[in-house]
Amino acid sequence: MVIPHLPSALSAPLLLLEKNFLQNQAKIESWFRSKWHHHQSPFYGSVDLRNSGYKLAPVDMNLFPGGFNNLNPDSLPLAVAAAQSMIESVCPEASGILLIPENHTRNTFYLQNVYALQHILEQAGLNVRLGSLNPEITTATTFETALGNQVTLEPLVREGNRLTLADGFKPCLVLLNNDLSAGVPDILKGLEQTLLPPLQAGWYTRKKTEHFAEYDRVANEFAQLIDIDPWLINPYFESCTHLNFQERAGEEELAKSIESVLNKIKVKYQQYNIDKEPFVIVKADSGTYGMGIMSVKSPDDVIGLNRKNRNKMSVVKEGLEVHEVIIQEGVYTFERVQEAAAEPVVYMMNHFVIGGFYRIHAGRGEDENLNAIGMQFVPLSFQGHCLPDKKAPIDCASNRFYAYGVIARLSLLAGALELENKPSPF
Image 1 (tube, rainbow, N blue to C red):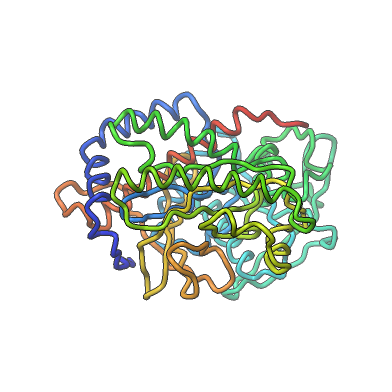
Image 2 (tube, rainbow, N blue to C red):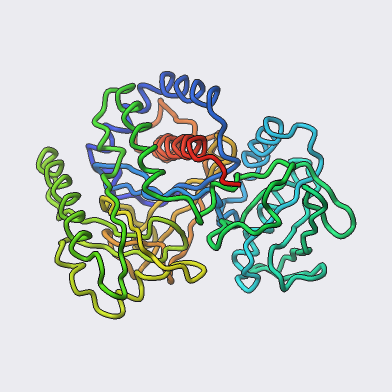
């Protein structure tokens, strides 16, 4: 089990927050049980966290997690139990599942993720087959993963309102590990099979601002439950639309929104005597893979961007143009692993924490996006669903991981509400 050294463990404000979580564990877990009784959890999800020593908050939430290969093997029993629980709730009669991955077959590390996810589902007692949306996959094709394992992708076949494979495999459950950034192909529309995550979870329609609006409501209710300032677990944000980075359209509006968020942060920094320079992260309102992101400390930083930065901000995955962004409060990371800036990423299945890893980047600073070329991953082991140890020191690993798990589950709950309030367009 990897226990990285965390400089933030010496920071009193976060210890107070963690202590609050521990003191209110029964109340917190009861609250979560009530919420999951009334709301259906997403099938799975991952949450990027930032731990500044005075603040612990989510900065992104993915409903199509693609890093199962980065989890500690010790977490496999947790993942299998969570998968079994989820299957029992959505399709208890399921004996097989059709897993649909992304189309980029040349990314061997992503294929390793597919292999790891398939293994979890197989260990949960399911017959797992991989169906591909890639038009280049016209027959069963085997690919080698980054670690030398093999995955076999097969072309999808549509029969009426059901997805099958060429040999007649017809599962009642279809699981997407494809975030639909390029839109929803016709073959996925109007299925009678259970499709998870639902189509409205895809990045073709989902927006980060919508997620964080739901998270804002969840965080406020949770903060009231345990009597804390919600800002300690919640980043400020605003949206800006009608942008065209290549033509420099909307720069002034973007600068005004950045100034608005920076001013809010300054007030909080003064309140908590934080001697740091406020900053924001400007990123595409839809999409993932760390594309379309920049760190900004002044509204002037976005006026007259050079060509390199305009190109970086104007296009995301699948070549989609960026016209809407979220301006999100930047949360410093005070965590270090192997002398590099680090941030925890927590993985969940059903509403259970199943593991996670540190994303580290030796070439990035504490106020920069770490989800970039050159990043590395250090697995974490979340023991017993992130259960805390009240008899151990407050800053011990299990207690810190419990705090991570609480914040990640708040974000997952926001994801559940987000999907409930966004009906499928098909």
